[in-house]
Length: 130
Image (cartoon, rainbow, N blue to C red):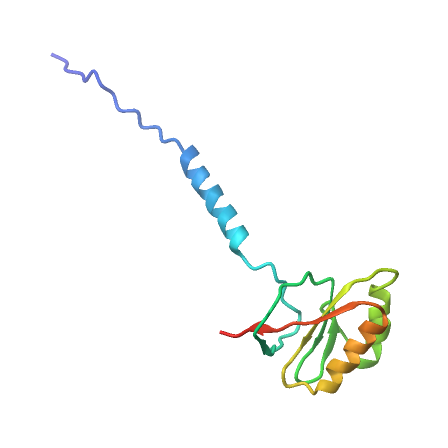
């Protein structure tokens, strides 16, 4: 007397709904992540009430120990004008200054003047008040 069940349970599991959820989570995190690229050298930026997001084409960074870099390439102070003129050839670009808040203002003015002399739009990177 062999008793067998007429209703067999299918043990297959469909992963299509799980992949849809993972794909939606991936899209959500990509859209809500920050689009600002960090500069190469660690800089303690000053705070500002209005902090706009600007596409960073050329970045100039000055740390509190007066190390200079252009687009994450460490250079000397004397090489800044030469490096910026190479990067800003024949086009109007955006130059973003990442200058530590402990750096004297004369360096900000000097680098901003070099970039403005090369007909670039100059903006200063800040962090928003919290």
